[in-house]
Amino acid sequence: MTRKKTDWIVACGRAGETAHCQRCGEGLIIGTQRLEVALAAMKAFLKIHSHCQPGQWKEPIPASVEQWAESRDTGVSSGTIYKIFTGRGVYDTFDIPHDPDDFGRCYRLLKLAPEWVGQLQKVADEFPEWQPFVSAWPKLTEMYEQAPRTGERGEMYYVMQTLRAEE
Image (cartoon, rainbow, N blue to C red; front, side, top):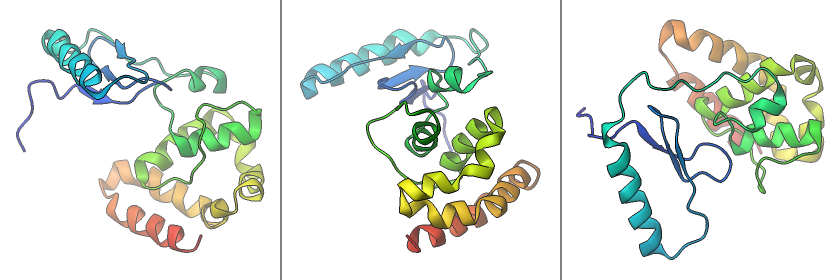
């Protein structure tokens, strides 16, 4: 696999960000623009950040769920959990975790609020499509925690797709 000149520029980030630079930490917020304006902004962002050096910036690790909600480690599925337990939304939509990366964002949020793990049924009560995931949460957690040691995420992805089919 070849590396692109700016592969440290990644899509998304904090809520509302279109992209961000993983080297300097700056985010790009385009909002609702005409397509040609958005493309020009993205090209300019890539050019500006093409010379950013590794190690300039490190994403802070959130110490609370409030800091998590302001971080780049959010996603729609983890935002769904956050909404149920805080009443505040990170996103306007709600969803289940679709892959190990989505699950990882949920996992890290729950590490900040471990008391929520035993109450995940509240998420399924509000969003019934979560029920298979809530029931399988201990197994998914074990698989996720073992993945860094084994490097294997394919089996977890397969299990998650099976759970999605149960919705």
